[in-house]
Image 1 (cartoon, rainbow, N blue to C red):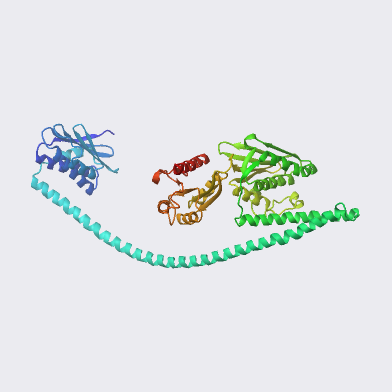
Image 2 (cartoon, rainbow, N blue to C red; image 1 turned 120 degrees about the horizontal axis):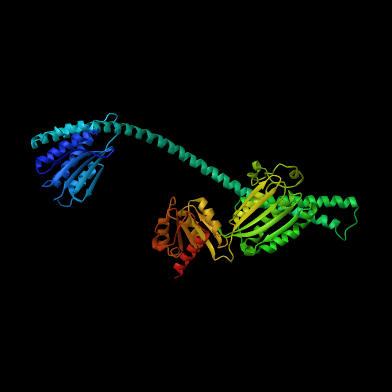
Length: 552
């Protein structure tokens, strides 16, 4: 509904300010405001009323659907913007609006089940007679006494609450102290377990190093003896003997391959995969793989094809790792394809600046319930072909670890009865590395992994530190060409890290790129990158900019 006028009167003398105060409180009470809000309205009117007092000043009290409005007109008054009375009123009511020659005070009302009729409110306000200054003082004293009683009551409640909070604090302190003792004991146990795990890991590495020599050497010897037996110059063997010797050789070669897979997997798990990027002729590699695997495809009647786009004909990656990945994917595809074709394709994804290599087949496919497990160590998809095919179930897990070491990803998509597609994505970089070493100082493991992939091919070595303290240790041992610094890290944060670097003459010249969740200003005008939506070209551009700044 529209605002309804309740009463209008002039404010020409001091006595009128007292009337304004009394009418304002009465209107607030009749409109349904609580006692404290009634006093606030009355006090606000007193303050503003004294400011506009004079000839031509009027007051209008209106009632809206959800608010009480009091408009004070002061056509001959001074500008009230910033006056003490208006500022105080602004703290007592919900809104104070200044217009040309007007001040409007607004107080929000709560819905009432039984509102007082408008005519009744008008009548009660009209019957309020003007009062003297002494009566007004008594009224204000009464209001002050009521307010003081409320304050004393609230103070008593506050004291009672404080007693409860203090008791709760003491209880929580005792529980926290007990918890801390448990945490300290747990940390001690974890340190002990970590030491045992490190010792076990070192023992495992020593074991695999020994096995690498002790198993491969006799297996290679057996293979060599088999070749001597069936090769030219040896004593003639019967057809059955040749068959048996070939079986021995075939089994030994299979065993050597399985041992090699186990050893390679152990090497990957121990974190000893260190890519050595170089220029790779992908088109030539695909052709060689097709030639070496053609006997297998001819034996099964499966066509083996490859298609490499010119943009990715030459990559920058570790050639040996890439070759092992593709050989593994092609071998799996041929093993589980009985008819049709196996195709290796390579193309450039310009949107992500990645080289995309796919190996697709028309084989038996993989059921959805098994698809998410194919990258688990030793898992083999249940199928009749799997029984006839030899393997350890380590090929795909090892291939994925190699892909991650190259800064890329490896995923599978499959439909039972139609075939499988393996997709290898690698950062696309068309030239030799620009940097020897880059250090990433960030407690966000996911971001470090993403940045490492973006830097593949751009830097030969990428080191990681989860906080500023670890970054200082790595930099002191081998200063990097550039460091990516997150400003928010535990122990030693980015600001402290930059300060320590500035104080060290050896570290002060290391170019810095700041990476952060929210954009902010970095010290010394260093490049700043937001983690959100970070793209490879932006990261490389920021690194080049940081290095250019120091070179200048």
